[in-house]
Length: 160
Image: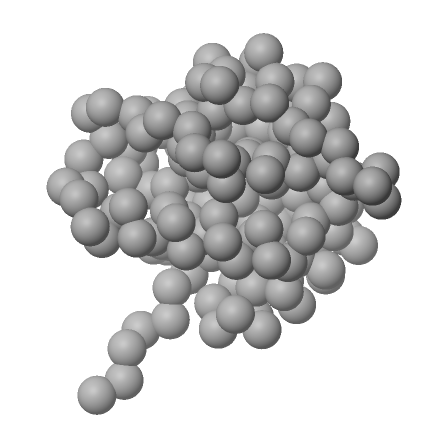
């Protein structure tokens, strides 16, 4: 019996980031679709089913927070992960967003894998309803209400 690969939509205006995260996600056996514009991503979600959406916070036309708000109106049960090189500077805004996780750019593949695993475990292990947002764990997964990034010796900010 073969299991269906989970489908992830990545919305980001930077082609280099899309190539890097796509390669990382495909190496983790996810099916990946990318778009470079939030409006295109919102439109695609109307036509196709995805198991998770990763959204950049700063994009032309409409930003990530507005994109998340629009996605949430129609797709309450799809986990959404915010991605930003400025996650530490945007923490107040991200605390208000209805998200399931935060990824700091540049992406650390181990943190990416752990974040997605934790989100999918939570979704599969509990009622998929999003009536109560999850709390933030030390692994950077949750609604980001208490998100505090840490600086690592390499100067890379990450949520762990």
